[in-house]
Length: 289
Picture 1 (cartoon, rainbow, N blue to C red):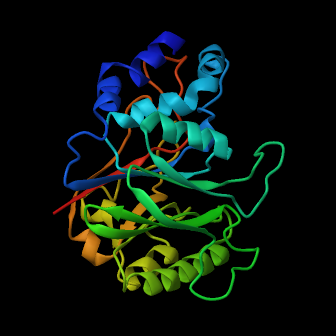
Picture 2 (spheres, rainbow, N blue to C red):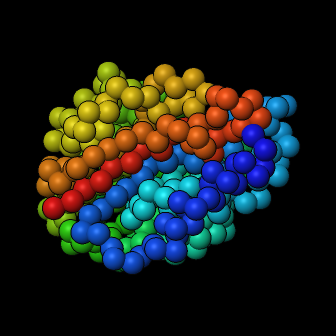
């Protein structure tokens, strides 16, 4: 994809209009996006898109912000966030607040900084916490990617938001990570609804999925009829591992959900020089009275 073509998609009239109108006439609704953003790297990296990706790379936080602004989100959670200063740039491009959650693993040359997370929102963040727990502190073997939570002041009143990224390879670790979050949710849901968004690295037929259901959480994608839509990888989508879950008091307000599966969230199949914003597709949901 040529640089001017990509910027035309990401920063065109629709997104610009959404940015200029952002915060005006706020709807009595909450629209949220869960996104593994691959640290604003773009994907895939090929010989065919090397020039376009290289030209856009330094501005991918702003390009991604303008692209998502067209959907008028109130809340965005990042998995595989970049360094905090880039999260701040993204939030500032949308006029939003943010909370940053460093990952448990500190990273290497391929993934400097590891896999942090973030909550970005137009609402006031009244409290945030990295690696929250319902009891004792988590061992280092859990949440090597990230776990964070925040309390927001929203049109529905107080809302607890949890963002997480589960272990990619060890099911026994994911099961323990899920159980600990369920305990956390149980401690929070007595005071306000809870929204859980994450790259959970498991499919709907996995034991981890059943844990969420047994805890009384609602898979918003499944509730809204998109439970069969894959979220990864963008080049050949085949599995669903990115989710938005909610406690029933919030889930009953769900109005729609979608996997954002059009360019630039995926490569343009008509243009071998194109690239996607990440290797995952974002998941979006809207709640309203």
